[in-house]
Image (cartoon, rainbow, N blue to C red; front, side, top):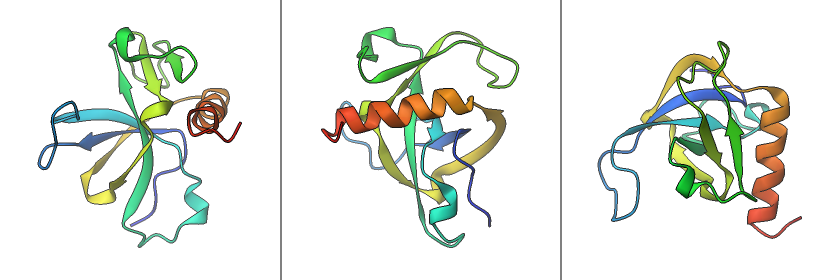
Length: 118
């Protein structure tokens, strides 16, 4: 199995084991890890979830994703950099969609702000 490239939009199956206020269904997310840093057999992937709920999108930490043919979004959504997490690759299903290199770079910068590195 090969790793999903950074910037890929995937679907994560969050069902099973979710706690209150955590996702509990299949949801889109963006791969933010540098897939070349990890061997193919590494069991986890770094992702940020996507949401249409602008109320969850803290302006400093959320990247606006407008619908395009390349990303497959039907409406404007937000990549929640402050919700960066690791998930088992068993929970991840690929799609043909992806965000732009500029959007990925912006999400990664927002992650550094959210964790206090920047």
